[in-house]
Image (cartoon, rainbow, N blue to C red):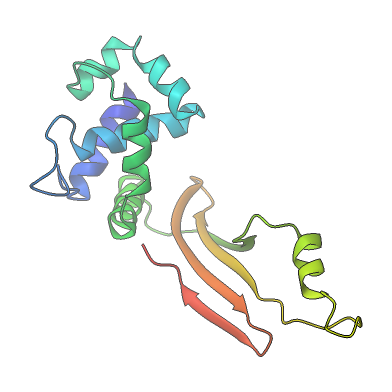
Length: 180
C-alpha cells in the first residue's frame, strides 16, 4: 500500500496527465497503468503472472479505484507506447520526492546489439564468394545501441537515461539519438 500512495504523490508532483488523449477509452487512467507497472517492476513478475497475482489483492485494487484488474496485454501495450518525456518527468519527480539537496551520481554506459543475428552469421554473410570463386569482402554494417545511465548512489535512484544508436558503416561512425 505504501508504494501505491508514494506513486500517487509522485504522479501528482510530476503533473502527469490522467489520460494521454481525449479520445482514450476511459476504463483505466494513465495513473493506474503507471502504478500497476511500477508494482510489476517491484515484484519482478511477468505481465501474466502479475495480473494473476493482483486479482487476489483487493486492497490494492480498491486503493487504485479499480473494480477489476486490466488484462495483461493492456499493461503491455501501455508500456510500449509510453513517451520518453513523460517518463523523464516521473524520474525527476521521484528524485524530488527523495528530497536530496546534493546528488552523488555515478554514470555508466553499456552497448547492446540491435539485431538478433549472431556474429558468426553476419561474418559468413560478409565473406560470400565472388563470381570467380575467390572470397569477396563485403561491407558489414553493424548497429549498436549505447545506453548511458546516471544513478544517485545513496538512494540508488535512476536520475537519467540516454540511448544512442551507433552505426558502423565501414567508412566511419554515425550517431543518432534513439527516438521516442
